[in-house]
Length: 292
Ligand code: AMP
Ligand code: ZN
Ligand code: FE
Ligand code: FE
Image: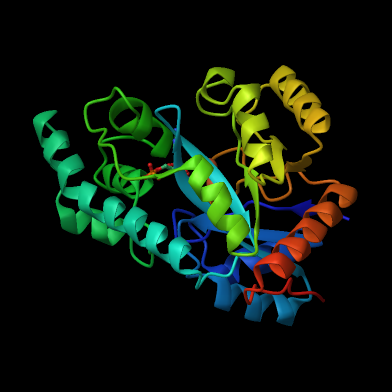
C-alpha cells in the first residue's frame, strides 16, 4: 500500500488541475491520495470524480494556514465538514488576507526596484482560490527576474526579505479544536520544516494533543533525518499518528515528487478511525473517503 496524504493542485499553489493530480497519482501506483490544498476545498469535487473513475482512494483535506508562537504553522485537516460555520469563517478570513496582501507585496517589490503588475500575478494565479507568495514568485519567473520559485522566495518573499508581507492566520490551538468540532482530524504539517524545533517544541505538541491533535507529519522532505527520528519519538510518546507525504506541488516545488514519502497503513487506518469517532461525536455531515 502506498499512501501519500499531502498534495496540492492549482486550486492553491500546485501546478496541476485536480484531474491531472489524481491521474498522476494513479499512474505513479499510489493506493491512497490525500488532497490538501492551502485553505480551500475548491478541488474536492473534481478530484472525487476522477478518483472514482481511475479507482484510487481519495482522502479529502485542507492545509490550513495557522499561527503558533508568532510564526506560521500549517495544519492538515482531513475529512472535516467543509460547511461547519467556524471553519468557513476562518478560511474566508485567510483567503481574504491572501488576496489583500498582494498589492502590498507588489508595492514593496517596486520599492526594491522590481516592477510587477497585478495583472502579471493574476495571470500566474489563474484557477487558484488561494493566491499566495508562490504566484507572485511565478510572476517574477515569467518576467525573467528570477530563475525559479525558490530563488524568488530566497531573494524577495521570505520573512525578512524586501517583499514579505504578513497575512491573517488562525491561532493553531483554535483551529485544532475547530477541525475536531467539524468532525475531522488534524495533523501538524512539517512542524520542523521551516523554522526548526523552536517553532514547535514538544511542550506545544503535547498541549495540542490534549486539544485533539491526531498526528504529526514526520516524513517530509523539509525535515532533517535526525529531526524525523526525534519527531517520531515524540509522536509515539504522545500516542499520535505518524504520517509521511510528498507535499507535491506539481512543478511548483522540486524534490517533492508524488509518493517520495508515504504513510504506513497502520497509521493511515488509525487516522481514519479517529476521523470516524470525531464525526460520530460532532454529528456533522463529513466527506466520505472515496474508495475504489
Ligand atoms: P503563502 O501561503 O502565500 O504564505 O505561501 C506559502 C507557500 O509558499 C508554502 O506553502 C509553499 O507551498 C510555498 N513556498 C514556501 N517557500 C517556498 C520556497 N522556498 N520555494 C517554493 N515554494 C515555497
Ligand atoms: Zn504550497
Ligand atoms: Fe505546508
Ligand atoms: Fe503543503
